[in-house]
Length: 244
Image 1 (spheres, rainbow, N blue to C red):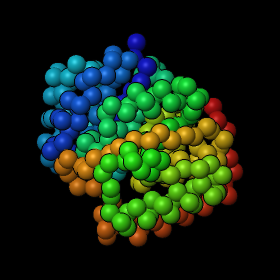
Image 2: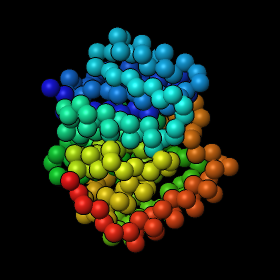
Image 3: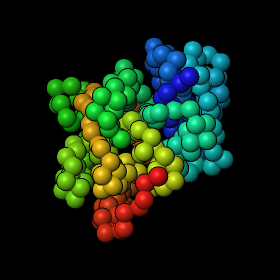
């Protein structure tokens, strides 16, 4: 029986998706894959469907009727995990080839050995290992959110915007009930820390995206910074939610 679900949100990722799935083939049968096609306008859906027969791993595909954003796409994966009732861990993994597939078992092992509710793959925990570097402005934004989340939650984090993460059942079942619509990573990381979940990071290397366009472009950067900052401060003063 599979114990881990790899959720891959995909919006217009025809250039990289097939290679991303190929890179997962070394994984054991403990893993299954869910591709959430987020209303793509290119060939992402047909490529995703084709992997169901070409992949050694079991691949599920869900297609949203319209583009709903990264938050909705990822939450769809958590809802799928709840309804299947099969999984211990849920991995968020980008479709664009940036995330190192070989580090997936390391994230799961870190959760198991350290009893973590959420383990984030960090580009900044070990700079010798980090590999590809994003732009200077993006690194400054990540550093700002790292200080904000660390200071308000009293939990040290170095890469709060990383979309490469492993969630244990307490975290992903909570995410299935409540998840931000867009730019969810810093908000959900802070939410977990504030609710006394055990959060950790694992040093990983990342690559440049292999195709497609980033969902965070320059013209959206100011909105992104303001929206996420305000959301974190609002969450800070909100009553804590009961964990089921």
